[in-house]
Image (tube, rainbow, N blue to C red; front, side, top):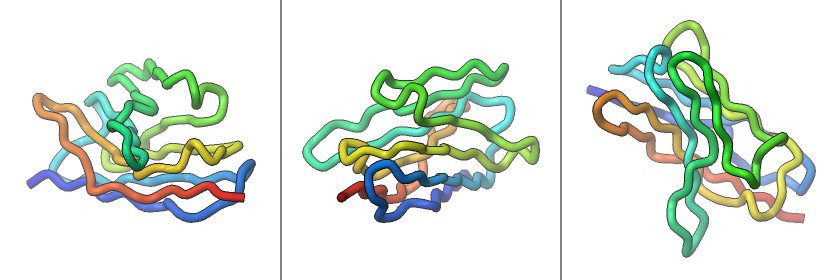
Length: 114
């Protein structure tokens, strides 16, 4: 059974940083395409960052230069380092692994408010 569990969200002020973690079971994050998505209230879920099996990464324009996606060699863990957070980054963040099917976790709340 595939399970993804996010952690690391919280309430921060603009300009601060957070590091989101995602631990997978039943599936490897290494060797598959992995990504972080977010959904703000009243908006559709959007891709934040994606990391291909060979290491190529893409980011949505609004987070380029501030967020970094990475994964561990233990094949189970991935992260999203978020720096210089802005109020518009407020959302529920989900980690996902694509392996034939797109598996995602339950999400972790990130709130950025002055």
